[in-house]
Length: 307
Image (cartoon, rainbow, N blue to C red; front, side, top):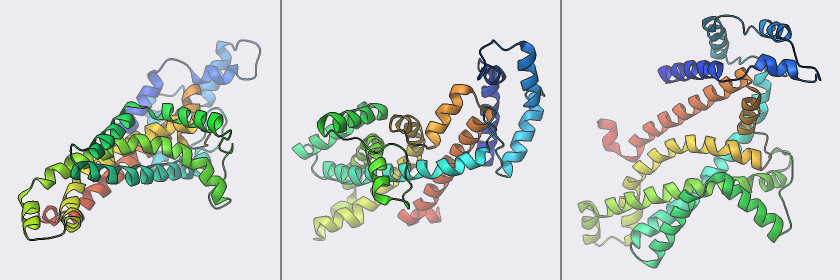
């Protein structure tokens, strides 16, 4: 994880400096009718320490980031830590609800498709998976808004209300963006579950279990499903990246004040510290989740512990 975080921090730091545009010019142009002079832009660059060598800028930023101090926004001068503390819970809640929806839908669909292979139930499950893969999350979000507004003459409440302030209003705001994200994620999980289950159901120990007279439910739940879950759980780790990418657009569509919307705003004005902080935190979360998944392998399959 340490080399990964170090490599990502260097890449995002360098990329933000070579992209076209100048954040100092953007700041100088705010609130003024006249075109800023080069002297004004240079003065802002000096005030923000953007005139220093890149190595020194990276060292100062990384030294503070290691203490979880991500500095201040270049445009607003607000503490990035304070903004992140307000926005991270929104993105985490949206991600958890989306993953729950995806897995609640995908596991039964994948299992039934495998057990009822090449039947009408299998065809419906596979069609559902293909629709989720073919439909981008932002398009699903737009369709949900159109359906609610045109079909039911209703839209989720604007603004954001914390779960502990008003659970009902919070769920009204979160459930529909989570459905848009969960539908896309569930398609991949359903396909993987079906493939893994089909492979396991052809193994000799499944035939032996059936020959012993075990009920089909016991064979599926105790012998087949547990072994089929290893590749499915591996997929969950990769879905964290897809989930983060989906929240960027979904939060903008449903006006949720999460990290994705925060990142879009920062990118539009090239606010370096905010972008770097979000990318570094996302990388850490991605690496940490995959580490936990690696540990879970041993609980699912005892043979992995001894290997």
